[in-house]
Length: 234
Image (cartoon, rainbow, N blue to C red):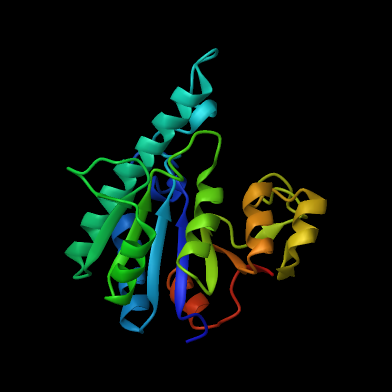
């Protein structure tokens, strides 16, 4: 095993399947089976989910809507995805704990670092929801924060693209994919893989980032085992 403790960030669009919105339950079940295989290999896992398949903060908000209100709606969307993922994982036989940065005790445990670490030590899959609990911060930044707090060996960002490109491969057939980048290269080139705050946070805390296509079969497992997958930022 190349990475013993991993933090996996799942974009909300992954939950929406090909359409990118709503819920594709076949995709979610397949994702759960991948996570189970990684867990059975001995890895310790933290998952943080986005909410873009439901609501994307200011991009989904009507014109003139208060930014804080829009961000709170986005955070609640991540909780919906987290509950769905938790159910899928438990149906596949995994013990899980859902922790939210915004207290909602009837649904999940409030996020407490020491409790989170204890769950991971007990081999439970921990799911982080509601971002950082603060407006103006993306789930990318929340992922970088949680990866640092759980002392992860790597932050894996699961997307619909098989790595980082110099331009959008969906629009430009000649887009170049990178196998490896430094944090500074990502920032200086303004590559839109994660927001700058998240990249800088990982740089300051020496957490490598691995960007991969999570829809490909066994990609997550191969990455944790050390296979050459996606783009490494380190």
